[in-house]
Image 1 (cartoon, helix red, strand yellow):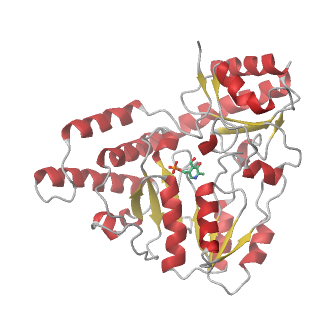
Image 2: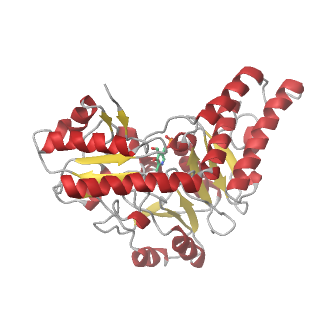
Image 3: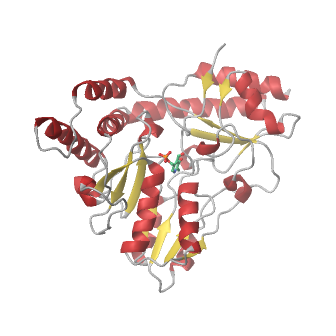
Length: 376
Ligand code: PLP
């Protein structure tokens, strides 16, 4: 039976160049990077070369990159670090952030370490910049945490304007860029930002590895106490082949960025047009169908209520189409997500289709056929 994978915002398949380099490291480089002998130095060199490669690709300094286990850890490290070490007592965020941010902020509020303000979000999932500015007009040391692209509906924020606002009010700025690193160009020389986060498996790299970028003007104390790895910030023997795979994945993504962007955009546009033509009862969520204001890898739709409501994803899976109902972490779950609740009054079944460089127009034709068979 044919299987179409349209859940690339949850995770992506490994790139063959990434597999090749990781295989090579796994076979040939096993030394502990903290050991001072030849074997250790060989591993250590791979880590530092990877750090330099990544830093160069995003126009940062290698000392600003800390390897983590992925996006969740990096988000935690940024927010907790800003509160613990940079004097932050107030966080401005939104109710449509990833749980890695929402729950981290909630736990700090619960422990009375910070107060939180939620910036207004309209029914398209757009952040209200006027409201953000009025929230910034306070005397508290503030961290703004707003995701670059929403992982459920794909909305992009105007990261440059927000960074300028944060600077104006002397607030720190963290953006969860987990869905955009590897899919857009980053030039941190031109963007005034304090923290960005990355997860390798969102752009054909390995799972369980990512990084946190911390602007050199900020000094954080260790998040994980232990050995002196990651310049004392994160104790524990490094995931050497994961780090090498992460750097390779970002290198490949950056090298082929234009080609992949135009391929994936054309697939998304084709799906939008097919839906408009063959399934006019389907609505697009947020700015999902607005090509220049949403992530080109995500198309989120609301479907009319049918007998399948609760079992929609299950039925699509039975027909060979893998997609998701809400956040990446809850693929296969049709409960209304916290993001959709913020933007939709009527709770209709939601499906997120997300694309990668490996998808084809044929995949979309197949998916549209299956949707038509469920709905017509
Ligand atoms: N932030 C966003 C926007 C995500 O989409 C995800 C993953 O779904 C994460 C954070 C968590 O990343 P990781 O799975 O690497 O912990």
